[in-house]
Amino acid sequence: MPAVATPPVPPPALDNPAGGALGFIFTTLPALLRLTCGLVGAVVALSVRTPPVEPALLLPGVAALTGWSVWYAARALRHGITPTLVAGDVVVTVLACLLIPRLVAPEVLPGEGSWIAVLASTTVINTQATALARWSIPAGLLVTASYVAGTQAAGNPAEARAHAATLLVQTACTAMMATVMRRRIGRADRAFAEHQRLTRESLVARAAREAERRQNRDLHDTVLGTLTMVGLGAVPGPSVAFRERCAADLRTLVALTDVGPVPGDGPVPLDGRLRTVPERLPELRVRLELASCAVPAGVADAITDSTYAALSNVVRHAPGAQATLRLTRNAVAVVVEVTDDGPGFDPASVPPHRYGLRESVRGRMAAIGGRAEVRSAPGAGTLIRLEWPGVG
Image 1: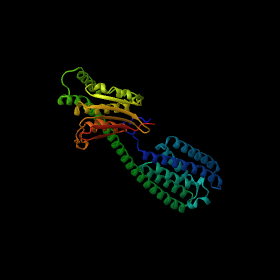
Image 2 (image 1 turned 90 degrees about the vertical axis):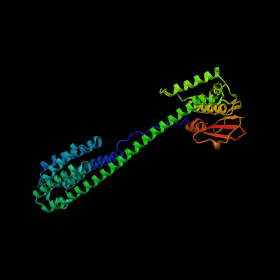
Image 3 (image 1 turned 180 degrees about the horizontal axis):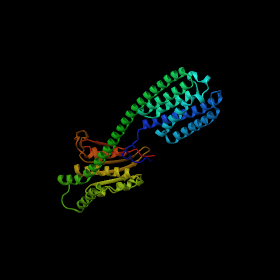
Image 4 (image 1 turned 30 degrees about the vertical axis):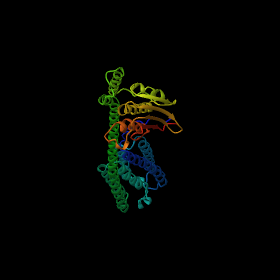
């Protein structure tokens, strides 16, 4: 059996989801790029060791660079890329570039294809992607200058010029791309945060309006209903029933200020709840035809209060009428019908500002996912049908 519809709960706030996704990408890709280039570079470096390459310097250098690449990737994937990690990568690359004459054989240096050329490009790209432009661009220029210095010292100015141009283009393009992406992602996150704020405010306002409507319904069905009957002369004078009704109204007013926990919503006998409604209106003759039926407590409350409002209308507008309260349950819904043989009325002629049927009956049923139907005509009595599609 479906439960009662509850007030919407504002969604939890999410911190820069687009920025988080971008950060994940700009962490994972640089980590994998550094690890791949480090391992491949180690193999390439060790495959060509012709003079003036010094194996005594090459072997520990390659081991250190490989260890750094593995540690960089593991640290980045686990904790993210920090400024310290970026600075360390730049320092390691600068040292390797300055040692080109002793780490790269002359025959593999031209063509921008040496393992240190790849190392320099990887560092430049990673730095632009993981650091702000005011730090990443100077770092890219530093790596470029150290590569030029190393290749010049190795006696290959053509390589120095060629790869320096490549490194500068990589620095500029990657920095521009990263800056544009960060700005666009920032705008998207701000728009998303604003949307969440407006959604939360809308839901809070909606919940407040619904609470106000519930209070107004309770007031209409109790205090205002009693005063209306007194004003219409339906209460001939002081009586025990009138005092009991006033006491019940007072209890309703006290309950409106109760902000304690909401009672449980387990199934309760609706027929038992409805059987007590005529006891609150002793001046009305009511015939009961109630089938056994259990519904969630919140549904029972709403249907019972709607029934009370419908019968109160009979007392106010059709004094002396005979009313029937019927509860049935079919294959698709729980149905409550309140009928009377009073003078009836034209439902279309009821002013829109009138609160009774609009809120005390239709509003309550709509709040639990049900509906209310009013059938009446002058001289033909009135039928109010409450339906909750909760059978399951």
